[in-house]
Image (cartoon, rainbow, N blue to C red; front, side):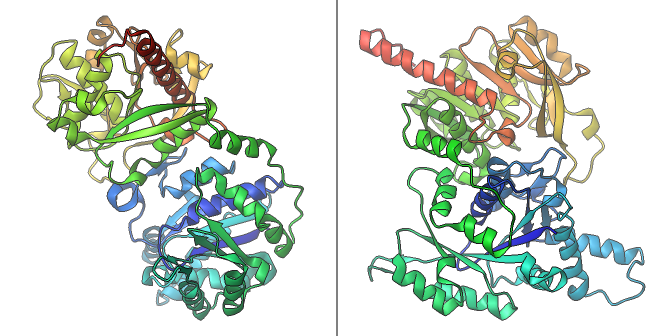
Length: 547
């Protein structure tokens, strides 16, 4: 029978439940166990697809087209288990399913209630992952204990030990032990109160993981154990990491978390195999080079909006033993200042995906600067569309070229609505989503990076390169480096007469891992590193080029 681990959070949000859950999944996988990961989100939206990045961070897209919580990005970066639409449920999805069943008469006239109908639906979504080939299902509950919207989920997981046996279930609670500088001491009371709330619901945590700025010591952990009714060895410090989030699993190993889980759940696990991962962490902590990458976007203030972009840049840096210094630039700022003032000295420019016209002209100016001064450029989704607009205006001479998303009356809609999107009225889950095949053009930079003739990448867009302009672009020197299998949709563009200018319609950041950096991100960082080395050489010889 599959075992279940439930990860809850208390005191404050943003403690890193997703990262901790993913790290636990990694440790169990590296002990030879089959693990499935899941996130339950207590908001009423059906999925995060229509939510503002300022509210929720990035929307993480799976192969099957599911628009999910960004924590699923952590799951895929740390573990190898398959994720699909069953890996992320929201309150909205749960209630929608129950209401649809009620409308079909499946409850046979019963009064539909939170208990048992909503909780049964939640339990079914959890237990559906417990297939015969799965050893452990790890379910993370979003939000914080005490939030009213999370109560049905907590009630559901309280019931599961009664359904499948207490010996098959473990509760892990992540809390904060704040350090008060004025008092010069760490405070355990918030953790005590958080566990008390959990116990009032009927859940006794088996393991406590306490987030801290600095080590709190045995005296504090013993106190937490006593007042929270947890074994001393089951109170585990998770001190903030100095270098990288990828150090988290190593810290958990040092506290014996994997052994504790295997012992309590009676798991037939093998020895922990982490030598390659420890070597990766060593490389992360000891980079040999550094580059500065400008990321120009409209959600720069909120780092989680481009979470997978930043992680993918780091992964490529790991592959090249290079520290990535990200210069975050608000796109609208480029509309108020000369690009040279903000982009001077960067080793590469990346324009991420997004929607809406705010900051578009700033992105286009940044791309023009990168193209003209031969700065390595990587455009992703909207970043590719902006590159097409820039080329149309400044190379083809189509001064009013634009996307029909931003200007419905442009004479030159070089980016237009996908044919399949024209009749759509509802926004949620209706874009071109999920894994789609792409055929690579032989002899291109992209084909050389992937080393295969055909790839599969995840998409999230409504607009495309207008095929009516394709010949004009190729005649002017733009290379179509990848298309849909039928050749109709342009997926990748390149400029041959540029050190590294690649833009893609898909989202490669969703398929990058710390030990397996995405090939295009690797190529981009390699080009940025070469540029930095060349500029350093030019400066040394006094032949530096102005930007």
